[in-house]
Image (cartoon, rainbow, N blue to C red):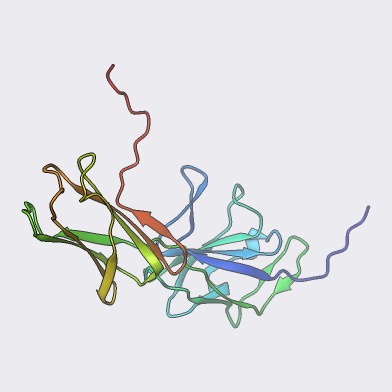
Length: 219
């Protein structure tokens, strides 16, 4: 059967923080100097160059396609690191052109990118040692605005202690959130910790927990 293609490709989406690792032949995330453009079909890699693209408030250092990457993906390396919540507009440059495998050239298209860069947080605790009726404040500072109910904080301590459990948080200023634990009667003596999970407006989730794999436990 003969297939005739006379339709130029189109940009389907752009996602921040994505790049291609040539050592592992895999896509990686949270690369603040990169983004990936997805076209609606496979692209002729020879037609792609940095000069074909513009990124809002940034410069394009390189543009690459990779044989092992999904069809239609073009990875851009940027001259300026993106903010954690950046969603820049991505366009074909005035003189830019990107062709599909049939040679049809796209010369004009624009898309708003999606945030795929995870937020970061810094946590502080007001007390190293607390006594009865002390108010222990856990402060979480982030590098971007969180989603509504985008902070979950849980206190962990000795079994049966009234001081353990999820605590209510407030946001006294932009990108700063706080949770307060009042040491009340029934709060057991011992070591306490806080598990914290944050979600940004792009639905990117980060927590302060340590991943454990292949752990050996003595009998």
